[in-house]
Amino acid sequence: MLKQSLPAHHRPGHGLQSPPLDLILSAPPPPPTTPTPTTITIAATANKNTTNNTVHIRDSLPLPLPPPAPLRTILLNMIMSMQT
Image (tube, rainbow, N blue to C red):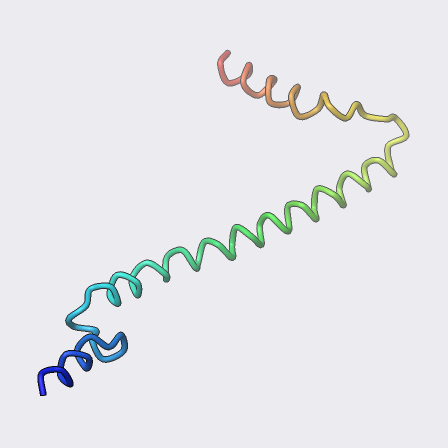
């Protein structure tokens, strides 16, 4: 009789009260699931927007822009403007 009662309590589905693992596993998932899709969508849209913008800018502007300089120069200018 005792052997039959123990597995019933230790079952993952019916043993929600005795094992804290089910509560711990059920609590964390909701928060991480919401931010991950947003970050993925933002990253995907950002990549698509940047590629489209760069293509359109390169097609519209006849002057070739230096590829390695812009990001570093913009960041340095922003840092210098914030410090001054």
